[in-house]
Length: 257
Image (tube, rainbow, N blue to C red; front, side, top):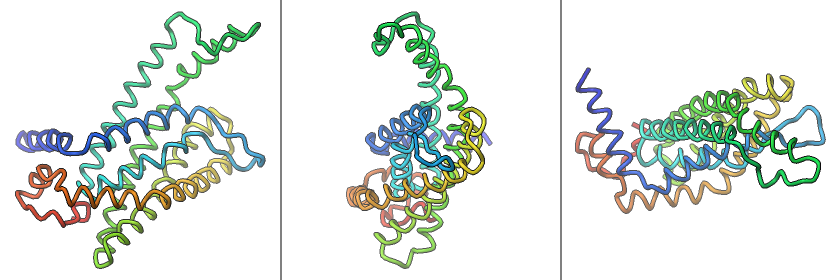
C-alpha cells in the first residue's frame, strides 16, 4: 500500500512537471471564472428555458480536458480536474473572506444607493458557498465522465483517422458530460436557490450542452493541432514513460489504454 501511495504521488509530481503550464492555467482560470459567473442567470424571453453565464467559460474546461486526456491519459486529466477544483475552492474561500473586509466597492458610488449596492456585491461573494457546492459536485462528476468517455470513444474509433477520432470523441464526450454538468448544477443550485422549475433545469441542461457543443465544434480543430504538436515535440514524455513502464511509443493513445 505504501509503495502504491508513493507511486501515485510520484505520478502527480511528474505529471505537473510534464504538462504544459498554459493548459493548467487555462483549465484553472476557466473553472474559477465559470463558477463565479454561474451566480448570474441569463434573462430569456421564454419562461421554460433558463441559463447562467457560466456557459461562457465551461466549454474551455472540457476542451483542455480533451487535450490532456488524448496526450496524457484519463488519470492525468482527472488529476488536473481535481487540482482545478481545489484551486477554485481556495479562491472561493478568499473571496468570501474578502467580502467581510470593511470597505466600499467602486461600483457602489451611485448617489442614494451606495449601501444597497455595496451590500449586494458583498453578498454575491458570500453566497458563493451554495454555488460552490453545486458547481464542485457537478464539475468533478462531469469532468471525470468527460475524460473517461473521450478515451472510450477514441478506443472505439482507433481504426479511424486520428483527427476524426479526436473530433468525434470530443463532440460526444463534451455533449454528454456538459449535459450531466448542467443538470447536476441546476438541480443542486438553481432549483433550490434561483427558483427554477424542473422543466427549466432539464431545458437548461440540454440547451447548455448544445451551445457548449457548438463551441467545441468551433475550437476542436485547434485542440487537435495542440495535441499533434505535443506529440510531435514529445511533450510530457517523462510522465508517459513513467506510467507505461518505460515504453517510449509516443504514438500510443494513452487515454485509450
